[in-house]
Length: 288
Length: 328
Image (cartoon, chains in turn brown, blue):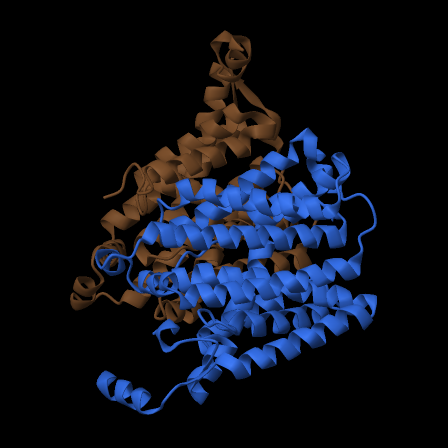
């Protein structure tokens, strides 16, 4: 028993878990923004992530460039899709209440899933850049996979840029004001619908980044969205709605649960952590 | 403006279609269906079985979401568990499928009771996502559990007597509808709708929220499990990916939205539309979910009360309902 535990809780696993944490954080950060600002449960977030993964894969194949460079195209593309989606469809449904809006995102998720199945076939995909297999050796027989390190850096940069945008720019302040008090914000001249549209655009842009990371780290299918939606939701629940530092902590918890659970029980371990968290402290660790 | 609207709706009396005429129509309908089950072709029987089972589950989802405000995205938990119980009882232990069916239902009800301990601590979207997470966790567990054949799933041994299964499905569906009707017309039903509209206010006037919610959740778990058991006896094979598929709840949500959430007969109308669409769209495989999703979004945008809900509002009638049950 002790030996099994020692095999699981190794320093190497801890390193992998922490590195994966960044990926899970960026997965959850788009969801947490929509929760916290638009007050919407976006059940299509997993499909958005997979859509991002497909876009990156296809663009990097077509232009024969490194997958990371595809972000130059996918981030603006997904940002625009998100803005259009929010202003054309979701803003309108949200007038009817939170439940119809939830069901509309549910409808969107099944539409997107089958559309991707038709467009890209059911085959497993993965992006394999040249550095995917290399490692950096550390003293004591430990090592850091280069790919995981790069993904962690991408995730952290994304979250940093997002935090700076929300804190330092006019639009960012408007969005945060909307999230705190809709009436007061609109009295101060903030266009609520525009703020929501930009927030959804940002969430989609983070989904593009998350999609790139997911597509480089694991194989994915058009039907993988649900799995990543639940992980994103888990990150949000652990961290607390709308909290970006919370998303980082949630991502870390999920990364560790995934690694310590191993290949066969990693997902199950993540779900169990999530259910316990929902039952014990549903408002999250970092809620206001 | 709002006051004027209220006055105009008050002037139009709402006719409640219920009582003896509705009972007679219902009995005739059931009699026709029984005859169809026996004389119909095997394809008719397959379609009818689907209609009965989906109608049962949709009525239960409507009870949860439309009348008590518990939007569950995890009814597939009960379908999958009951399907596996059926397969284990029949294939592994050599019991008859009736035993497997009843065991599946019992396990579904007990599971609902156990899950309520965790789930009832949450409200709204937390509840919705938690139910889904539980189903996904079970799917992952069953995929790596040797006793139930891991990812390869299980086959229910023997050839089913499909006429009998279809008849059982019809009985299940009728019992479900009658049960929900009496439940909603009881004191519990009044408390439930009060709770859906404002949980805190209902609680403060003495509605026992926990008990009412528990009764509904366990009944819904029981009937979804019974429907799932019959479905997998009829179709023979269960996989972790099919038994615990979110697709089950997708269909139920679609049916209830199309028919009219929070109306008694909405799920029945919705089921007929859904199964008809499903049969029609089978020719265009790959497109069915896209079209279903589009229809669902359009209905939410333009007919938020669903087909039956909109008709009821326009023509001022309600089927099998009392005024107090319509959602304002």
